[in-house]
Length: 390
Image 1: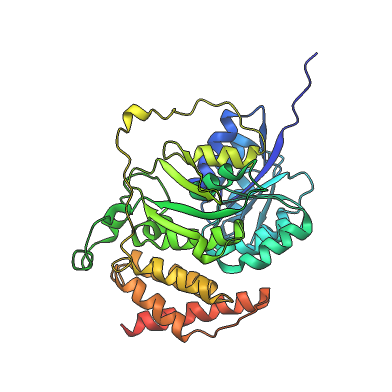
Image 2: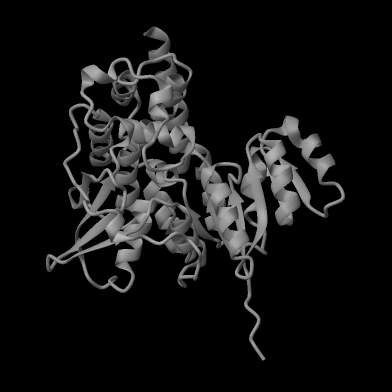
């Protein structure tokens, strides 16, 4: 008689985005191991309704309260509880039935629901790097206090995490985060003066949402990765190196004190780190396309162009300064990316505006959660004023 496998029950915050939809594909393929407990979206009611009817979670959240009636009426006969509003995100993660919360929300919006989930004792599959960028020290301390696992979903951090399994007693000398270089690899500042959002949204390797794709093009994504890595792996800034690897096959590396280097490699497919995070500590058999070395006879690496792509420098500066500086950096970046996507500022102006905001925003050396919230608001106001003055 075979023992019945207890399914892991997953809450997906941000189920209509790139990570959320791919996570649902993983869960569908591994339906004997996982089941959906909660789904949330911001305003895409049509997608939420379709997902809810297919995966039959116990509850869904539509953050946009104007869409509540539409979702509730569509699901009234499905035995699915429907909530709405921002506060519902923090409340629904406390469901006792949930085993893992996948935070796939974009930007600062992921912070408070993730904190609520940690307080409720839920393991976190973290695809929302801004949570640690904004309040890394607070979040990691809370996770340790509650005995909660923070399992990284970003491909680079998942790679580091996988390299460290079985090595937790061996000190890290440094980690090496790889960056694809995005669509503008090798371009000069002069060439970037007139690039369009359409060009910036064409990533050569990864299929991601608009905000993350623009961050990749500007190298801010890698800057945020650096800050996230500092908190995830308890590192000093000087222990984090960034190299450009256009093929996106080596997802990141760890160098230990004896000089040995471990790398995690594979095709650029987010389903693998998603499955690894929600299924940890077990690796689950799947039908994903396998990597073939002969298909990639040349893997290349280079130093990032920090003069042209200033965002990476700004991220390291924010990390060195500490306190609320990374929170300010993140808030300013979210505003400038939105402005760039609305054709209100140019590609290179994004870095200029972020730098100016970092100079003008109030610095707090030892921020509380309330300080992070107020710093985020202040930085957004400052950034909008700078953009309006251009």
